[in-house]
Amino acid sequence: LYIEAVKASPASVDSYWRVGAQLDSALTSVDEIALRLDELIEADYQGCAAPLTAHKMILVAKHVEESRTVDFKLREMVSKGADERVIAWQVQRLIETGKWRNAQQLLGERSNAEPAQARVIALKQLARLAETRLGDRVKAAEFWRQAYQGDKSDGEARRALIAAYESLG
Image 1: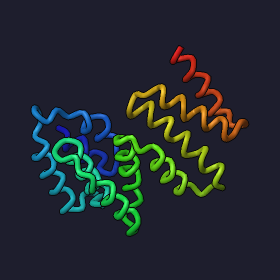
Image 2: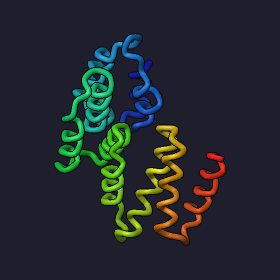
Image 3: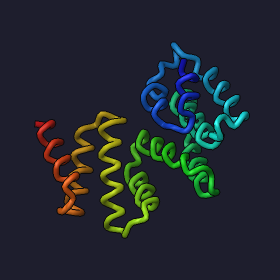
Image 4: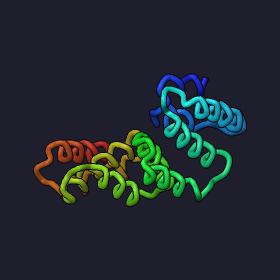
């Protein structure tokens, strides 16, 4: 079933963060899923070999071997000009491992904005990710606060910050 969800949107991080990250290794054969991902990678399913490779690396690191080399391998894939969709996987891995500053730097570098605006853009993305992918409303509020401090004219950041503070009580 998991592989069918991956096949529906092979480059997307969604199936991983909604289901794959929460798999119970005792109930699900992560090794079997990894083998099925290998088949999709080898077939370059829908032209998504690079994002599927990133998917497999993160899934295996999370459930089988907490490999420190995954971060390096993802960074290497991006620096060698791999599929741009791999960046989403790299950001997912960074936030899963609590490397928020690295994720902010990566997102900031990828925006084509001036440095101050790139920082605000990255902080807003991190706020959304903290809330949606990790359910961490405190972390999200902190990022919204930083984004608003970076650009007091940003209405979205202001509204989100107010909503975040209200939800935290």
